[in-house]
Length: 360
Image (cartoon, rainbow, N blue to C red; front, top):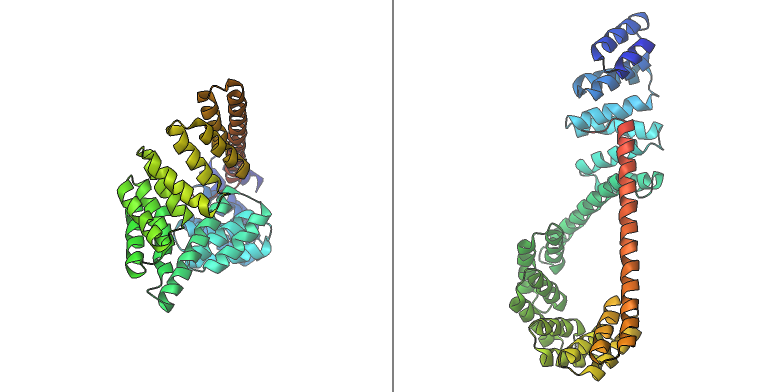
C-alpha cells in the first residue's frame, strides 16, 4: 500500500495502479485501496473509473465518508447530478463538518431545482467557514433561483401583477441588460401607469443609458402623480443642474425644502445652484445646513470649501478641504481593507482547493 501511495505522489500512475492491483490480490476486501485508487483516477480526470472504485470502497466499508464524497464529486464532473445526490447526502451525514461535502451537496440540490434544500445546506456550510467566497457565491445563486421561483408563484397566482415585471426588470439590471429591464418597466407602467416607483426606476435606467430627456419625462410623470415627490423633484433638479439650468434646479430644490426643511440632498442641491449663480453667502448657508443634516457626506465639505474659497475665506476653506480629504481617505482605507479581506479569503480558498481535489 505504501509503495502504491509513493508512486501516486510522484505522479507514476501506471506503477501506482500496478501496486494497488497487487495489494487487492492479497486483500481483495481492503476498502482504503479502492478509495486511494479512485482518488488517483479522480486526479487524472478518469471519473468513470473513479466512480467504480469509490462504489466498491463504500460497499466494503459504508463508513468511508471520503469515498462517498468523491463518488459524488466524480458524478458531478460527468454531469450526472441526480446520481451524485445520494453519495453526497451520505458524505454529509458521515462528515457533518466537511465544507466540501456541504457545498457540493448544496450545489447539486440547486442544479436539481431543490432550492430551499440548497439554501439550508449552504447556510450550514457558511457557518462551518464564515464568509467563504465560494460558499457565498453558491448561496447567492441559490437565493437568485429562489427569487425566480417565488416570482413564478406570483405569475401563477396573478400573472398580471406589477411585481412580476418589477422583479424581472431587477434581474435584468443585475445582468446589466438595461434595454431588457427598460422593456419590463415600460410594460409594467403600461398596465399600472400610476406606479410612481416604477417611473422613478425607469427614469433612473434612462439616466444610466444617457437618455436624459426620457428620464426627465418619467420624473415629470411622478410629479404629476405626486407634486411633492422629493425624489422626483431632486432628480429633475440634478438634470437641470447638469444642463446649467440653475434657476430651474433651485426652484425644485426649494419646493422640496418647503415640505422637508431637513433634506440634506435638497440643501446640497440648493447650495450648488446658488454657488453656480455666484450667490456665495446663500450657498455657504445651504452647505452648512446640509452638513448638519448629513455630516457623513464628504462631498458637502468639498462644496463648502469651494464656496468659502470663492468668498475669500481661505482659512475656513482649508479646514473644510482637510475634513473632506480625511473623510475620503478613511473611506478609501475601508474599501482597501475590504478588498484585502476578499483577496485573503480567495487565497485561502485556492489553498484549500489545492489540498483536496475539486471540480476542474
